[in-house]
Length: 304
Ligand SMILES: [Mn+2]
Image 1 (cartoon, rainbow, N blue to C red):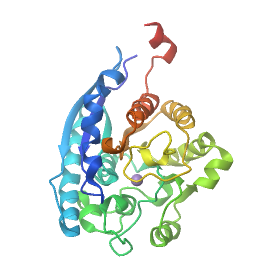
Image 2: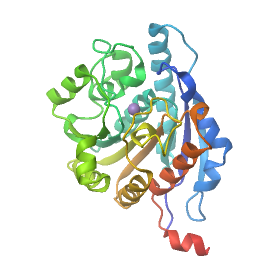
Image 3: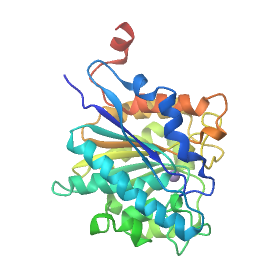
């Protein structure tokens, strides 16, 4: 059986964050050999695009730069989808999610809405009205739900790329009242970290998968490395204590990869300047290996 080729897309954007270091995350993983690591005989993997945001200083410039970047990233994702590949977007700060999931929602629109699992220490659901920093990487969830800056939310000329009932956020433990209020008003299912610790990440992801597959045409996963415990992933944009353990994440992502209907994957917020002994790079490799569906069992790969 032939698996979909993995189209790795580098999202070179750091303008969405206060520390722009994540801009160079995709390039660093590329230079470490990510594509070669993920490629298998029956499932090619290669970098299909590197999309870079123009640099920006002021809050207004940054929002403009991220909006322009989002539509270019969306074009790269669309090209991969049209080829029949599985887009795997590598960040970059999390503002890249606007381009990624707008493109996937647009491509699937005739067939129905898409579901999205958002694994993150944060809610990323600010609007310019609630954000203290005005940093666009704190806004992609709100934008995808159709709220906040129209330059982000209005890609392709329509709002609500993800419906609230088709979104699940897992691992949140650092957030502000304004974004939490928006998500609760919309009825988004949020599994905060105490629930993840009580039930286990695997059980939470199983429930999340059921929810995002219910009445949708496809599902996607956006994984922010800051969801992991900083011990396993110190090199992220905004580390937060008491996160998900790497092993639990790998086990759960392997289960996710068995579910049919994966539309795209995204791994974001790798900041090579903050990495320690390449630990976060290796975690990124392992997470992507676990999350990419392949008809070859791991054991067969070892034997081969
Ligand atoms: Mn995030």
